[in-house]
Length: 79
Image (cartoon, rainbow, N blue to C red):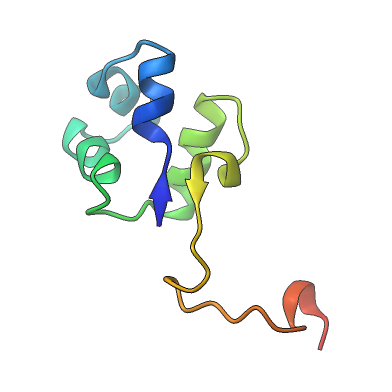
């Protein structure tokens, strides 16, 4: 899963430490997220998205193939 955290952080002119403090994680977690070595939990993804005033999908880019998510007609509970 890719994300726009570094891009958004730079646009907002905030440091990794400032973002980490705002979402209650370590700076190392932000570094790992930005480098793609760590996938955010849903709670953390939500906190980060809220911080930037965006939806989760606007910050985190899901690659359905990479995540092994089936894209059939079962989307949104439709059998």
